[in-house]
Length: 481
Image (tube, rainbow, N blue to C red):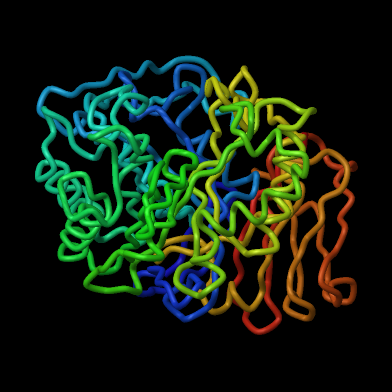
């Protein structure tokens, strides 16, 4: 079928089966067996009292989604709380003004008609489905704004079975959307070893996070056998020999060495640690005399052994940094290099500027990009992972091309990256559909091409890419500042 963009460019779109992801050893594969990397960002708010994305008081909801995609992220991790599923849960979104990124006016015109959190979440997932962004849904807390006080996956008002039932509801609701590829079933189960009601691993009791993950994960897979079950670590683990090891909330996966999670389909299990620097908490390892060289050994012991021994790929569901300088930036550089070297997956915390511990990718105006953070993240970004209904080529064709644009937004030069010999031409259009440039294959023979955009006026453009092995074009947006 054909899709007509606002510029008047018509692109072809193949029908396809869902592009779900599966685990093979320590690799994550798409539906055609190609290895993919999740390189995403958290956009939070549904887990708070507002029960909706933060920032849409200043920005158009779909424009923020688009900006994150334009920055090069290929998935979102979206936190939510259980009580937003209950009767009576409501939201209020105002429509007014002009979005500073996309220029849409008024902002949130469609969203202003929504009255429940699920309506907004539905629309975000629909947008991601249409725009080749994958989604990881993260059950962040049972009650709004309670993620710092809830140690377990259940509370007095949300028993364990209700938590599982809520997940089954969510899984069923989005089972036809291959954008929704991951269920992070509980955020940061925690508790120090001397806390009698803290999260444990392998204890075969009501505090055993491993057993709960199995029950919930298998219930989800009964409804949607295609989705990934993402299991975080805990805080403190007592090894069979009695030794106790403690780490970040959700970051300690050592229990999985002795008591691995058992799902009905092992290919749908993906472990997910969290990792932070000293701004969040001054852990003892940050003041060690051999810091930061001590960190790779700690990461290997706490979680990366699962990657090293081929048990599971790892999604670092949260990592973040607030300010430049000092040991926080030293830690961050070390961990970014480690992610790249070990081919870890990640969702950065956060897109939001209003994270007290880390700030965000966006600055306090909810529009300006904190460029030094993006400069660190750029080497570990990855290719888009197409959805069934996305405006791209088939999965195989995209994998064969590996097309990307960096930086985006830009003001002087953008670099088109792709596999050598895979691109025949690139046409540049403005949003009125007028062709402003045509780049032919004689200069596209290497693996990249540097394109001077300084001659173009600021705004949004479309690059129409024709692969060498197909006349089926696809488009990518370019933002010129």
